[in-house]
Length: 443
Image: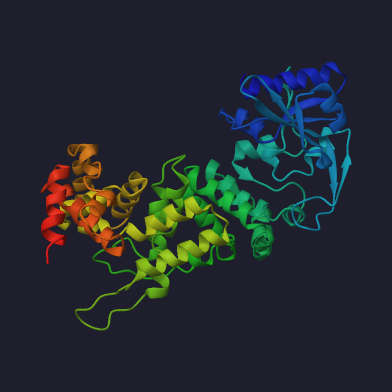
């Protein structure tokens, strides 16, 4: 069962029971824009208890705020059904202090964030209910807060980042009063939980308009509040012979512009953070013949990327991958000089396709040479996977049988055998054991 079918059925069941029911929010916006909605929400005058009575297969995911999740079909498709409400006070900047259930859809939409997200659709008749001018703003390409922008943003500070994300995603402009409201309250976005900021920024990075999104974060003063390390890239010059495009900020924006829609989240964050170590390691040219340098910017960048990931509560796995993308992005310049064993190990990095894509974006957004990229692509196309990641010829147990004592030296020996294997010097277990005996078991 599709989410749209389930949402329409829910509205029909609610109406059969004498209630009002409409599709609401982003799904209506997307339908009017002829986009495929990611999910569907239903708004009704039925109370959470009445909704659960009508739909026994439901979950009270936020019943205190009037929200019930209705499940349907063998796929267990989930639709959130929310009771019309008017919220009273937002002391914590996220949740209403008190919820008053309402009977009017007009009263309900006036508590929502932006006009384009406050439209209702009658799935039976196709009629669109618009109490806040949302259709006009959709046609004009405008992001406008409902009512007084400061009030909407004080209710939920994350809405400020969402304004930038929607404006970037739909290529809209932010209405002047809404823009001014964000700029005036930008510092208060720090009150939002790290997880919510991370998720919103990840959406901004992966929806296909990352550059525009970060330009808007900068313009609205949100960037130094959420990612001060990225804001510090502005004005940090780079050697023009390698970076004719300009400073670190410009280079990073150009790379963000190249990110495809729905790219891996870790790739997007890796692109954003790959040069985060440059501002603190900047060293101007000392004189004629010298150039701008960023000594150890990779090592510094890895530490900073890890700190940012920890601050934003990334999982350990994502943190490790993002840090690896930062740590390895400069290694591509040496691929044509690498020993075969080193190149194969490099290509065995976890999710290597992300490393390769980051490098491509890095090149296209600077000097433009794809020589190293094409070299690695040819290597991967021409080298069978079993040669890049062959089964181990010699194990630790084999070393014990040869009379060697377990310890740190085991790693050195096994790496030496693998180097010879990856370089094509040996191909069998017997040859591997013979190498160990020659190099490590005599004298």
